[in-house]
Figure (cartoon, rainbow, N blue to C red):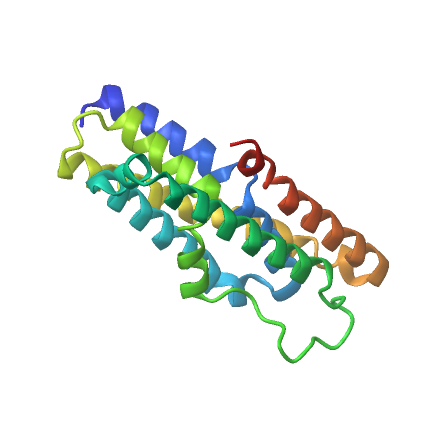
Length: 198
């Protein structure tokens, strides 16, 4: 991969990874509710899941959408269902000042990694990276692009989780916490708009 392609790819990776979307909204809510340490598996799952999705898409998985359009429709339905469920979990979470519910916990590494396969923003990132910035589809170029997204994921996921953690003191008031959670849930639901339009 030449610098002519790598530098624009890196810029695309930074902007697309750091911009608001389902992953970052969930990380901010998790950072506020559970703190950075307990959210680390969620953060790692995002990085590994996105990297895997990009690499496998570059190897030809994206062609499935062309050959079997119903797969795309099934992914949209799964994504909408999962995001609706997550929005409800965020909106109905116990206030930080309360005793946490026994089942309250952040997403695990595997849940977070698996979510990337139905995350519409992750698919958009992967397909754009592969089709626009990797015209040769060479394995070496694909590996470099995958690594670039992995490196960018570390500061991006950290930033959103720490931002949520910094809000924790402000959110010690149950009313403010409830407003924050409903706002995060509404923003997460807002990420469904591109799916509904597609």
